[in-house]
Length: 198
Figure: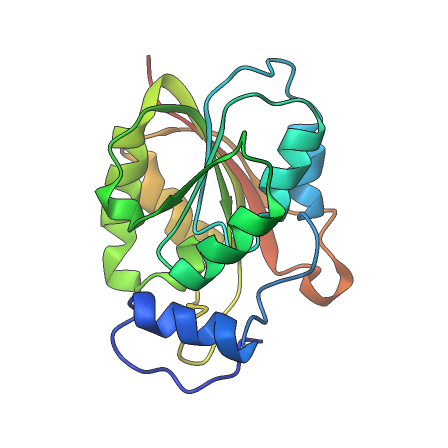
């Protein structure tokens, strides 16, 4: 899927090279359908939304086009951020930073191919950081891979692992195989919604 030799570590330089050389197999060229269908159910256009590891920002553009007023995206890659600043409206806050160094508060965080792109050793830190970034009662929602990969990124993951990882910290609202994945990913993605306790 993302065939390319993996240098260590997975730092900004690594991701910049991926974008420059077009090794962006995670990019489906549009907003993910499971996420757009979720977004279409949201009624409060003023909630504070974060998309980490946003890449080409399709979900951010989708949110903006539907009238959401408070959208923030973050990516460690300056190459990705530079491209985003040319594509996304100025109203979208674009941050060039390591996700783990963010210190803002959000009502909703959308996950799309970010979790599988970080080292598996950081997964517990991911859960802790998501908890810290969300306001009480806030939501983490999105798409996770439910399959095995050779090496990575993307790194393997499965539904049981995710439930074990998040269950001690978040309330699990939804965890199910996506019914609306793009054909190449059919049966290999799960949609999950986690709620931070009030």
